[in-house]
Length: 201
Image: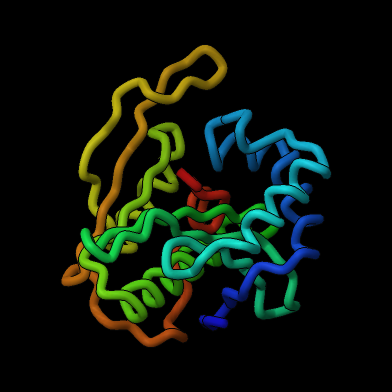
């Protein structure tokens, strides 16, 4: 378990399926987290159950999903993950979704992402981390930048939403660009992508 001032990251549990079901069937969460990607939702209870069962079997040396809890009341408010962790290349890909709308814009997502970055750079000999979002999620773009991620490129017109095309915005961070920070540092910034639903990528 990793704790900040306002949120904690804990291991995924089978009972988290009920929260995933709610988040992945919320049109606003689907919109901001994935630009309406039907691969994220809507989804049936059976589909979520299978997804969570699969997540529970992940091997942490390569990938893992954590539940984000609000420390004030212990409620699950979202999830963060890492995947494609490659010790040879020293890289990993991150994702975050804050599914509870009441927690958007409060900095909880930023703090959760910061805790995940601290964990990965502390536990593994990684040299870079990466994540992405879509260009319509401007608050996520700003929030990732404030956390120290740098825009490294765009896949132009790679995202389609309601008849409009958007870019897929790619971000990266090198180990030397992430100064050591205490696990209980201050809150991050808010908005979709950090304080709001993020981009699982």
